[in-house]
Image 1 (tube, one colour):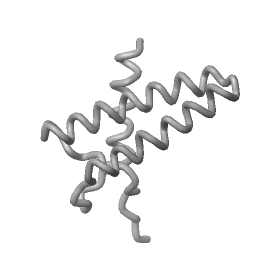
Image 2 (tube, helix red, strand yellow):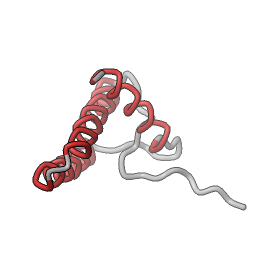
Image 3 (tube, one colour):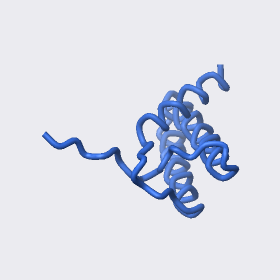
Image 4 (cartoon, one colour):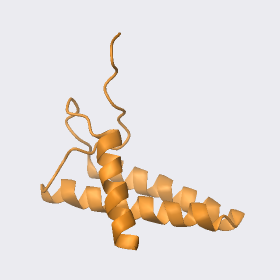
Amino acid sequence: AFLRAVHLEAVHQVERWGVEHDAGKRPEDWITLVTYLLGKASKAHFDGDRAKLLHHVITLAAVAANWHAAATGADNPMRPGVGPLAVSQ
């Protein structure tokens, strides 16, 4: 169940944050994202919110999978911290 959840979350992250106009992020951007998510997981732990803690663990693992794909050149569509293109009306 863990690996399936990580895979689904990794795909979701790419769909949510992937933007073609951005040149990509540096390793420190990935580290900042991981640190942010660790803080969220820590808060959930200390708040006693097991469901949120488990969610953040899955999210962290998915980010690590996407980071690995970007770092190895296997795939590079995820751009953490950069929102989707604005749609003009």
